[in-house]
Image (cartoon, rainbow, N blue to C red; front, side, top):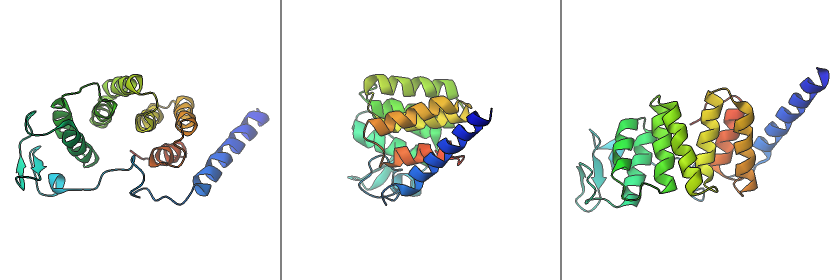
Length: 185
């Protein structure tokens, strides 16, 4: 019993040491592609699920023909981080490539945050089937696993992120913070 407690204490100390010894890359630094998106006119000026159209310089209702998958993905990420989960899902549903791991990942994120945990987890699994190196999906899946109380499975995702070269990313730091008891994304 005492050795198990000691092991857990050492493991926690190791995680904390990793958290504080990571290179100085801020969570919002431009070089980290897994960081939360900046706010744009889509969430600062538009309402009712409309997306800012840079060419028209106005808010427009999203349609398949009016935005490419990258634009829809960026708008959906912004909606999701702003807590507009249903708007994020609606934008993602318009993407032409429904097998894009980015699209699948944010369908997972938005559904999980909207209270549909199992549906969200199914999208994370699909994203990882499409690209097992997609560390942001691993991070969000790990955070979902923490919400479900499965700490060991969340740790597995942290190790996977690290082993896939993601140790110095926001995705890694965010999951590590979740493992250390902080509520993240």
